[in-house]
Length: 329
Ligand SMILES: [Zn+2]
Image (cartoon, rainbow, N blue to C red):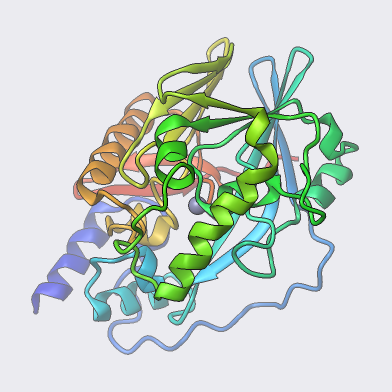
């Protein structure tokens, strides 16, 4: 039995939920998973629920994709391939969702994350259709709160004509990200992507934020944005990244932003996202916030997790396991 098999067995024994309980089922040489069905379109991209008195709706902005290696930078190649196959995922690319959250509290409509729009591929920008599906338009959004300024979180702020896509919204941006990505030309050489991608990535951040320059409120992570929405320090992925706690009465929802990209590679397996600028700080933030979610049994929304991205973080002997919540009608 080699070290890899031992590790897999340890994971199998410790995990109590999710795909990891199926580890080893196929032994070596697992065949590529088949796609069970091709989507024909028209499926829902919004999911409504309540957090105490707050009405909440996950609004999908669509999906983005990238090489699995980018999202699991320290995974041994053979192990990464095996984990993806065993989780019935493609091995040549990873699909990430864009789960923005609309919260309606009092007379305010607050959007948490703006989504990617067209900045990260052709399958973003669906938030406007999903807003329309619940009877709202971009005019109805008063406030937008951004966890960090990567393009998949700010892309929709710029309309096709270069103006403000959400014409009435004040945009809350973490100050340290504004200083790093907007006020200067950041050195992004830490990102494990081609130079051409890095340049486009940096330009997309400035382009997306340019129309809202005069409507930005800079915040320090830890601040309360409005009663019921608190930001939590989670730096590492970017200098200013925050996560969020939405709370009302005894109900809470913890948003993990980009502490993890996909539960299979960053929760069920504790691999480090390549785009984390300071991997040690990001790891410390991830553990601190996942531990809190697990210990206090707080429901979690993962921005990039499979739609609608709601579930629980379970602490295992070796790491964590992602437990998706049941769908509610
Ligand atoms: Zn992201």
